[in-house]
Length: 105
Image (cartoon, rainbow, N blue to C red; front, side, top):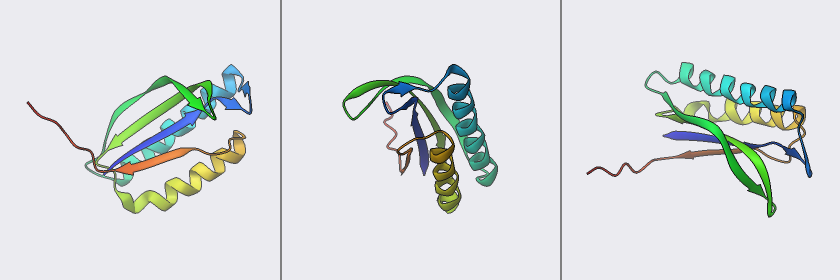
């Protein structure tokens, strides 16, 4: 099972300050590392800032993906992301659990 967490920088139409944005991304990275600790086979496969859109408006976004994550920590992840919504004034944070399809040559 893979887990991708996606966050956006804006609060309404106003971007978080550079420091709050850096702290928000660091927190999500910390959470991904907790998932890694919880899932012995897990590995971080990508993280980075991307162009995102919310409600039709462009905003700087960040995604991080953990492969082979244990879904048994889903409740913990959800609770911590709910707390993050409050701390960083977000309407929501996307946490997507899925089985990847690997296309080989």
